[in-house]
Image (tube, helix red, strand yellow):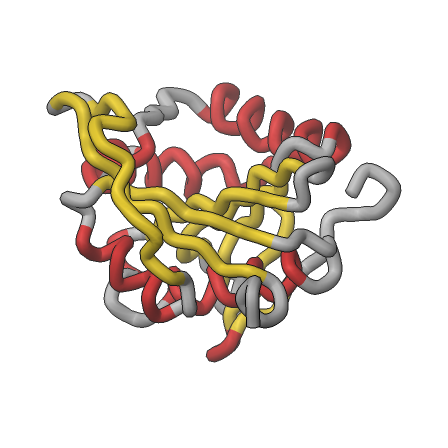
Length: 182
């Protein structure tokens, strides 16, 4: 990753996944003000400076090969959401996370962005396995995983602390190529 620029990815239906830019700061602050984004991602942004620092950290994490983070936009460059991948390159694995702004929910943005990111991770990046984990209470994320072709593998009990207490977490995964043993 560090030896190349972060790619721009094309998703079905005109989605574009591109690296974040400093001028995305206001849209990022607005997205993080959404109660659902706060509930599941536990992050607030209170200033343009803080948002720009976060965006800068994502560029640094690309270079450090610890995260790939894309702004999910439409063909007019309107911010619809975010997709991130935390790769463990030495292990050939990674974990995706995502959110979608309220106005874009219900239009298939998250599964299409996840499919584009997954294709890149399992193809160009060469990972063998990618996962996503979400609270069992977050049924919308369960639907996103299924639509993107991720298999539900199980439940991690009391695995993540949210503002309302400990949550059980669903583990979904997708593997490059045919399943093992076939």
